[in-house]
Length: 382
Picture 1 (cartoon, helix red, strand yellow):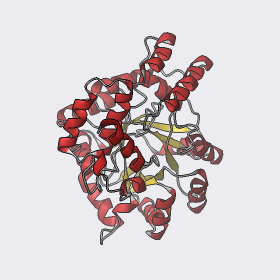
Picture 2: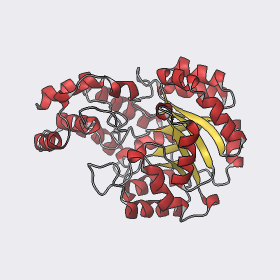
Picture 3: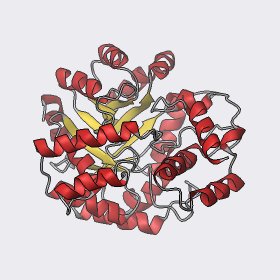
Picture 4: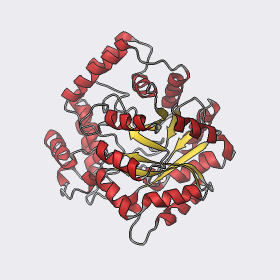
């Protein structure tokens, strides 16, 4: 680890060399159509498995699962385990500071929802280039520094989805920041929209540890087109497809933690097995991943991670991530996809209902052209 990461590890007694974090954005559901219907029984099973395997880092946020993720982790974790047995991270997105709602209003509600009186890690959430300007106006970073000085936050950082120059500006403006959370995976490493490799190298050059989010890109790198899976399975038939993505990020030297949004115990067991026997990628495996990246970029699939930030404010209730998932799947295998599309259209707005208001594109961490993508989906299915 780099010096700043070493200091964090020394100050956080729950931190160990097991760098897998439990991301609480894609939890098990009792109703797949309702992100708020968290399956508490299965979540408790996963929390027990995670802690029982020697892992301790949990990552939630104000808006995850229709604002219910923080409450769920209170019931599944903080009411069931001693405070010194886990590290809890949560986040504030600047867009919720409006209409008389202050940063303190949200922070103290988060304390109540999660059942803790301090957070081990706290982040200004999902900063894009435009969002940073709003963060400056709303004084989000000075506010977070005060929370750290007061002992209500042990370690302060931010999650970032912007361009490398803005990342450097944020770090210049706030030299006290202890870590940065970046979207890193083998598909986005040199992607012209995400530029995660460039952002990683900026943090590495400054000795600022990185927490990785979306290592499996919303699950899309856990299930690949048949020709790409064959490349991996021919080389190592025993390794899961997801483990290739996990090993890519876990092998980066300045990575402090890798978050995985695990949705069931099987996914968790696979990730734990990967970390418990972690091996760096060799040159042959790296070459296979380079071939997979070329194939995926040529496929024309929509690079959506299903974070669902875009859906909350949609005026015609279009389930954008589900339509994109279905579109990507149908390009590989159409069987059953038209019927599933019809079911979605009965429950949600159709892709062609889009009003082109642009609110989804303004908040999308991936910088997707959602309006044009919805037109592609409409042409394909409708």
